[in-house]
Image 1: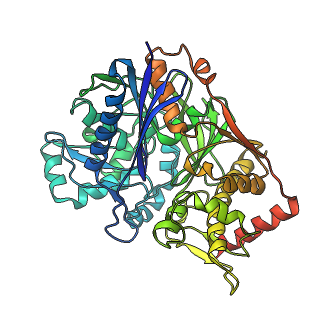
Image 2: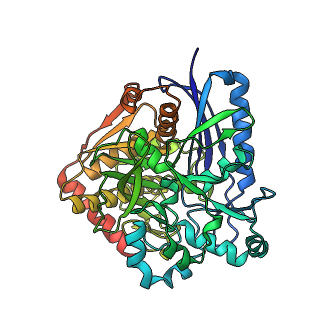
Image 3: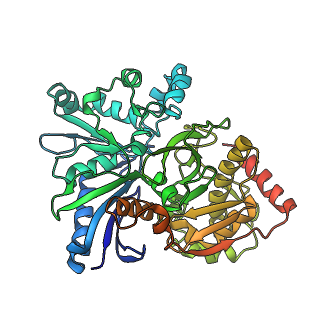
Length: 483
């Protein structure tokens, strides 16, 4: 009998549900865009009920074509840091999902400057509106029914994985894994537990928080199809796992809505001295490891901006040929600080910038500069890591939708002087929780056996001179200094 694993990847801009076989081959796939809600400038929200509706719709479509008896289990991976709060009696959210990109709590974060060092020691994170705690506090303080529900012991919180688990198990399981918990500013990554002092700082009652489990574990049964949920992980840690980066020093970069670079640092915590964060990653048995992470808020999202706001393209795929049709960006540089700058700058109040425009600048130069900005931001992360470890990254595993753009990948290799390794399946987040769920379901005896099925699609090597590279990076640095 064929054995399948179903994965649910709840991203920022879209939902992907994939059915894998035991050779990691994609048997079926459903994708749905998620509505982006912007109530005010720099506020970003989702409708949490839309997510659940689209998950059920996508799973229904797949199971109509494939026997559910062949599906052994489910793996869930998700955008991290985003916050959902709901009534545990009715299951109804009290407010929209506040997305990780949302900046509404910037001022509150600034008021906690004195706590910066102590919070970093416990969480590995900087106090920033990017993370969950201040978003959760905002809902409790500003949504009328939230306080009343809290007083009546009816209010509960979760990151997106917890919300999905709650709904798939028909309200029976209120759970998360350590990778998602580690992104909340409430979880002590040294002791691996919710931290009393952090809860007190943000005035969050522990009773509303989910129980934290290992990433490979049973998270209940999807009641509609009687399928066990056997793996849960935040998307970037899932991608690190999906790329097989288990050894200390292994690294990957995901090119999605944002850019997320992670380097596995093993069982011992190592902190960056160059403004990158420390987070929990997953070892081959689903238990905690440490990693250093650099997060860029606007990566592939700038391509959506070209399409939806500037109307320069109709499809993201057009950007590759357009960029290759000109020799360079004609001196145009874009710093896409649409929601501030993340690592390694951590400047939440900055605005985006286009510089170097002349009478000869045209839409092709702007499109090319937009793609180049993705690579420049990634290089900022690689540079920070190189300073921390006193050596340059030589090989980099990549994944995410924007890696389909050959121009971008080649430019990244050029500008970073790194060999880029792209797998044939760039859905590494889904591959990660697929393998984790399959390990729990005994489809493979260990991760190494599962990874024998992974294949490399393409390798990119640098094609420019050191002089050219240096000039590009100097120009980029000047552009960033202007924001």
